[in-house]
Length: 64
Image (tube, rainbow, N blue to C red; front, top):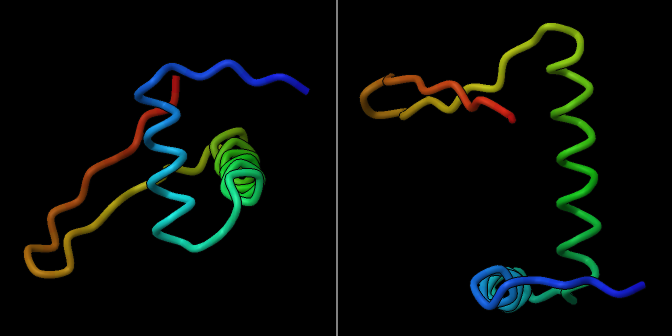
């Protein structure tokens, strides 16, 4: 498989790989699993929210 990424996307992949101490393939596999889980929940009508523990401020993540 060939994957074409922009320079910025490749830097992000490199950084995540280094930070998590896993291969780039492992980062992409984890990202796909996460995206599948999120999509499944959104399809069921659920929302994805982030909450700031200190302020309790919530923000909804909108998928396109």
